[in-house]
Structures are given as structure tokens and as C-alpha cells.
Length: 210
Image (cartoon, rainbow, N blue to C red):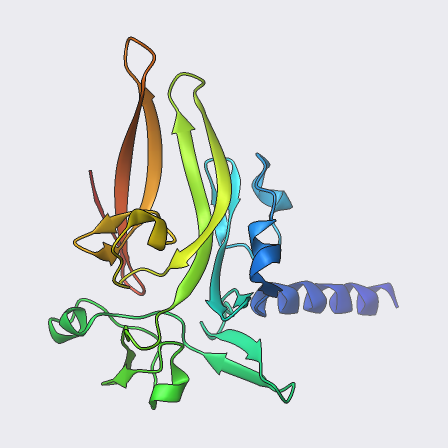
């Protein structure tokens, strides 16, 4: 009997860690990012870094979803209450052309949150820009600690004019990149912001630069 209950509990934990989590954008922005240990991160977090649980939500209108960890899709309810699934990651056409970027395989435009599928890869689409919500972490070099908050904006590879338009708050050649903000102070105590760019390919790792 106890063995049966144990198996059910294990299956429940596994299922919870696989399926995506859907929240309203306002609920996502209200997530309290506190210093904690990795064991306290919820199943839908993307991991643990700098003493904080990491989150990444992709949004469709006012609702946002994490990726299903098994299928790499996000899930939303349509007007009829049925679940619709989309591939949220995107590449630029140039990245695809030179074989530097790939996403989960799409077969038609409607498979992609961007509504654009080329050669089995989801591509950024100015007509359907993708919004995401992610951790924004700041390191204070005087206090030797990180602080964090959630921020929503255009996803990586989307075209932005201003830092405030991007989820990362960092525009590089008018394209969103991930960033960690380091707050340094000079000898007079004045704050100096330094952005550490982390340009993330959706499938094949990261490129770092300062």
C-alpha cells in the first residue's frame, strides 16, 4: 500500500515538473524574487543562479506560459477553452541561413508563437512579436550582493528601439539580447551600470561578451 502511494507521489512530482505553468502577466510581475536555495524553486522555474530561482515566461496577450520541459512548447487556452500549443523560441532568417540557430521542429506557421515557420524552424516575425518575462538581476559591488525583479518585454532576436522595450532591457544593434546588469561604484560613490551581454541561441548555448 505504502509502495503504491509512493509511486503515485513520484508520478505527480514528475508530471508537475514537465507541464508548463500559465499565469496572467500581472501575476508574473508579482513573483517575489528572494534569495533562496535551489531546493525551494518551483517546478516551473528554469533553474537556479546567483541565489535566485530563474523564470522565463512567454506571453500571448495578457497571459504567459513557461515552456513544457519535455516538448519545449508553451500552452494557452483559446476562447473555446481548448489548449493550444506553440513553439516559443525563434531564430532570425540569417541565423538559420548560416546554420547557427534552430528551434523545435515546426511544420506550419501556426506551430510557432511567432506564426512563421521556415525550413522546420520558427522565425521572428515583425507582425507577431513575442513578449517574454524574465529575471532581471542586479549586482551591487558596494554591498556585494544581487537583487532581482521580474521584467516583461520583447523576446530575444526581436527588434527593439529602446532598452525599455526588451525583456532584457538591453538592445544590441536593435536586437534583444539577454543581459545581467552589474552596478559598479567609483571612488566617489557614483553608480556606473555595466551590461554583460548574453546572446542566447534557443538551442545551442550562449555567446558572452562585454
